[in-house]
Amino acid sequence: MARLDDRSTRRDRFHKKAKKEGFLARAVYKLEEIDTKHQVLHAGDRVLDLGCAPGSWLQYARGVVGESGMLVGLDRGPLQKPPPGARIVVGDVATIAVSELLGELPAFDVVLSDMAPDTTGIRQLDQARSEVLFERALEIAMTTLAPGGNFVGKLFQGPDFKRLTEVVRSKFGAMKIAKPASSRQISIEQYVVGKGFRAERSGER
Ligand SMILES: C[S@@+](CC[C@H](N)C(=O)[O-])C[C@H]1O[C@@H](n2cnc3c(N)ncnc32)[C@H](O)[C@@H]1O
Image (cartoon, rainbow, N blue to C red; front, side, top):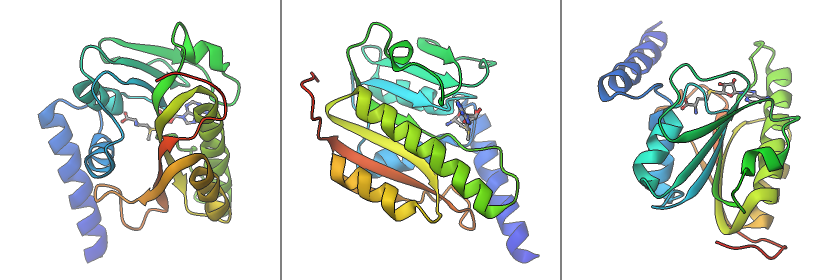
């Protein structure tokens, strides 16, 4: 019972902090922690955020990339309060065309994915659905990232975790696994960070 109280206190603390600081979700502190540790975002970057609603990662990204940066967000439904200056695409990651995400841009410098399945409580099913979302996010990253670009993707720890992290390791200069403090410690969610995309095609950055 004490542990449950600790968890809800922590959730409540991050929720209150986000509200006070004007962020749309407490998820912002996960990206902030990952970015502070791994420097995935930089001024002027072109950023794609998959599963962007309600929009706190876009808010954080804007603060780092500045006015010269470009933000594109995808989610299944429209955002209630879309962060100013971000182009929002409504659609499902499984079927969205990469050209629709890129729009006029030749490539992205950073691809983020905080996508999570609607959880059922059946661990194996939730893991399998998370793996599908992660793999699709990685596929989009490998198609749209400029050489040297960075990737962050949420992945529930499951049977395919090792295989998927090995794919990231093979396609990026460095692969790290992050478990932010603001993510519940009992949660099976992890973030896989790929830095320095090794593009096999000719692109620009
Ligand atoms: C944890 S929330 C993201 C929170 C966001 N990072 C923020 O800071 O506001 C996960 C999002 O993934 C989206 N999502 C899940 N499956 C998706 C899919 N197949 N296509 C697009 N978005 C999806 C959900 O609609 C949800 O808004």
